[in-house]
Length: 77
Image (cartoon, rainbow, N blue to C red; front, side, top):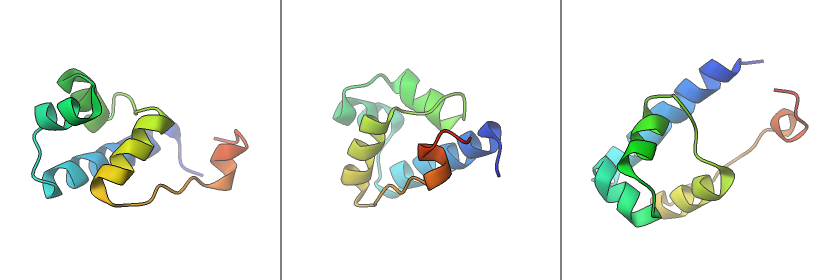
């Protein structure tokens, strides 16, 4: 099983990739989801992750699905 740091880095890479593919700056994305660009920067640098509600908003914005592994839901991470 992956450790938390590895998961955060993967999330950060994906968040950055999808934002850039959408042609958005961090500031533009932040405005769309009513968060600060500093929060977006923090997520993309792997120093934190958005809460599940923001994940769902981002998934809708980017046209992708969010899948949560069962072990995460069971608190095994």
